[in-house]
Length: 322
Ligand code: GLV
Ligand code: GLV
Image (cartoon, rainbow, N blue to C red; front, side, top):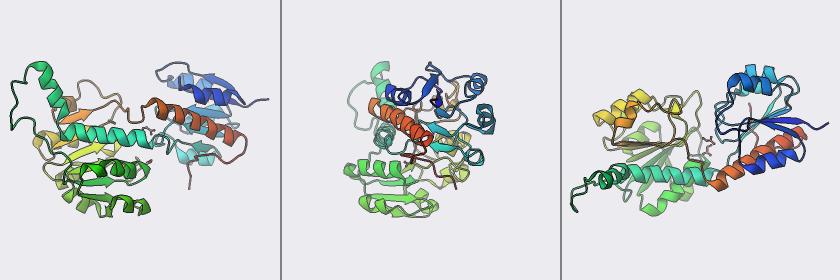
């Protein structure tokens, strides 16, 4: 009898097609998330779960699935929504999708950086609202990257690729802070420094780290205070790494210059969020990996992870659980 897999959303085709070659696939065939109670009902008896970052994979869900559950594959590089300790306890393997979205996320990080530093949100609004009177030497001047120091907090695959993308913009210097040395840092001549030194010297501070107990709300009042007054803060990791009220205060009071966010708490960000009233804050709806190519590859890799685990083979990209 074929193993059974539950897919928690409508996803790009390759994933479902690959699973269907060897498994019985059932799916929440909608664009919006499956309600939690429906999810708990649907996973019952399944051998594998294909999920997204919107589904909390915790012990309650594992118990609802039952003891035959062998693998959870999340179609994301982040896995802060997965309780790894619970998965380990119940001997469940976890797959994720590093690598295939690196370029897409890096390019959106660069897009946010350029948008904020060159004030594109204000500039586009002026064209529409009649504020564009004439060419003015002092109007809408931003910082640009020429000669800038860029600080990358968390130099993994994504952070390093952002650095490589930015290098041709005449960036003067790359700094990074990370618990680990990244040998690839040499490719962008990035220097590993303590966080405080990065904050004090960077014109751009990029959050490219995973959300963990150590990074949760690490960008808080004290950290914004240590940044330069004109610093631009970019976050394409997880909203949870930021203390969002503190970010609002820092932007409002001029403690820092601007922010570009692809991720917030909560998601979606309520339309009455005070952050949306700020000209110097650009917010996108968590679209960093949203290219057709990247999402299709993520779907395929998620399916391959699940199939490998079900067949007792080495998963292409398994989350290591210590
Ligand atoms: C997106 O945020 C991801 O983790 O893939
Ligand atoms: C983080 O997951 C990265 O790829 O940098």
